[in-house]
Image 1 (cartoon, helix red, strand yellow):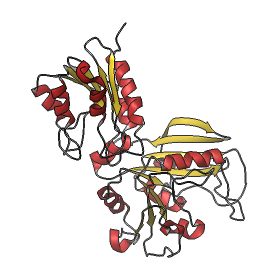
Image 2 (cartoon, one colour; image 1 turned 90 degrees about the horizontal axis):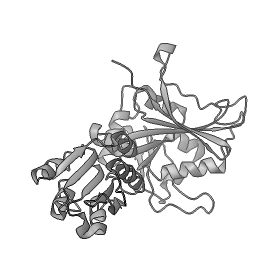
Image 3 (tube, helix red, strand yellow; image 1 turned 90 degrees about the vertical axis):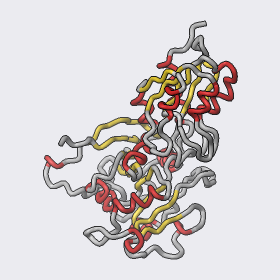
Image 4 (tube, one colour; image 1 turned 120 degrees about the vertical axis):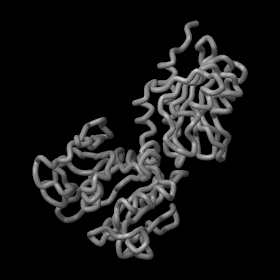
Length: 353
């Protein structure tokens, strides 16, 4: 029987890594496929939860002695340090693998160095196979490690004519139940959900990840963050209900920017210090505009309903753009129908120079 190519194995490893989204933070998602000397798959694994066995360890346990002389294909450079688990680089050396193929190097200074350890042990190490796919699947963790603050996703919902509510202020519901369930699934993949105090005062949201059909809470809940410059969040607000951890971020605690409001870069740095790798920005257009104007949004997920209101508040943000030359250009990366609505995912394009 023909063996599996390294490229095919890495594609499978990327698929395996995705199974850990939402449960591994503050660790990365990682997938691993082990091939024996004949190229047959003898072990698979992914990192399922922080503190649990790493992808390589799971795959090695499946393979046993069949790993000797084989190839380990892994989406992220094997770790080279002892934390809650031992170094994966050492485990691969002890297993007697002959080759390790890595998609993306580890940017974490505490864990990097696995490739060097493997080479020093006489193991062939190749890098860069399906690097773009592996990077995309682990983008939040990689981004937070490289720059020291979380990956920020702005989510909004609007009608086709850009309205977020009707003229009388009613907004339940702009989008369908299918779209709202999709949002709760999205919440389940991030470490924190962020809104401004204005949203809390106007809508009193729960900001939990839950099943809308029966109301049950997801096992893992993101940190609820309220950007509240002057500490106006009511004591009986639902974000204080104990269903999930909550941080009321005030200017007194985080620091104030030139406008007297909570300093956004300082807020993101503080969240990074709390182990937050990915933030879902769900506040109103004013807060989203501030993040966009500061260049702090990494991804946009918009839910557009096939409805027209003609009047009422809009989802339009003020991102400080005054002329067409200053427009924030986006790259569409996905357009998917969710129930009757469209989910549009876009990335801000980096400006040249």
